Length: 206
Image (tube, helix red, strand yellow):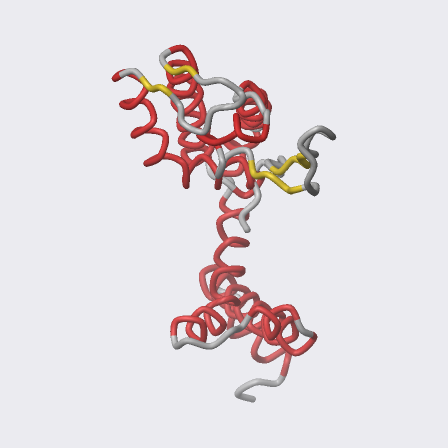
């Protein structure tokens, strides 16, 4: 899973904008809908239905942004003693429109979104520095290329989760990174006009 600290300036802004819009739609939905704690169905006015439609379409992006901000969206629900039952893990986002059944207010989701927005706003300046840093892009390129063999296997239908995290998988990624670093080093030497001297130094082509 991507971390918010690996996002470019543009992706940082996009995540913050998605969260802001989702928050606005959720506020409108709360105002334009009603329910009782005992009811299963929610009474939704037309504006609430429109807001719900937009939120459902944006839910995947919002969930990804909150996960990348490393904020937990799962809470533990304990039924009242009079009702009975067992504890459950409830995902606030994926159960957004049925939280009343767990006696959880949707304001909990607004608090979660506000925290995520704060994280992206605080990371705005570091995101700018990352985006204009060529070394950061080079490092991202190393990570992307070193993961390419495993992505090819996944696309072919293989389960590479265990392989990629294993000692052999990490060794493969390290080997690919070292090859790329050495190739980049040779390219820089060639651009500076020192490639032939380096070859003589290491005994290549002598």
